[in-house]
Image (cartoon, rainbow, N blue to C red; front, side, top):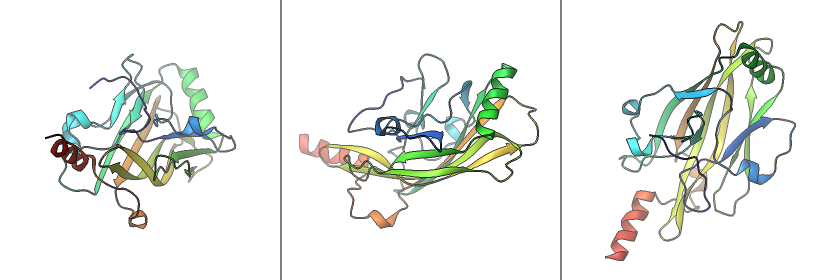
Length: 218
């Protein structure tokens, strides 16, 4: 499903975040926008929609750039699922056909320290940033992708909207001794509504919010 990239105030499925060199300072408005992974090349999903247990077609976790560039915007989550808690893993492959561009891309992420930063967003006014380093196991090897785990919480209020926040994250580099392929792998796992330490925050699933609104209207 092709949709225009968007990130709006208030009601949104978007997961807000950014990846940057660890020593750089970013403005909040650079972090509090829809997470688009590491940009570069033309990206395609590694997972077919019918292989995802907790997503309907309309709730597939990426909003793809309608201009055809293969950019994505990370979302969460399907409303028709039976369980409030869920886990889902999927990936994106980004091809860089030009060998010089590919080499520069890999060198950039292999020779510098990078950090993922996400909006915690326990409330709409919450500007706390959750951080995790891109961990290296073999620093002398090339970085050809990453494995990112996000602990996401769905928030909502019966009248006033819904949004998503990130409580924790880990990121591990995918490393290689050689550059036999010009494809950068971005593998993402979501662990949704598993953090009991924030039970005091407003955590109403949007499907429930929708039912309440319908009952109120009729």
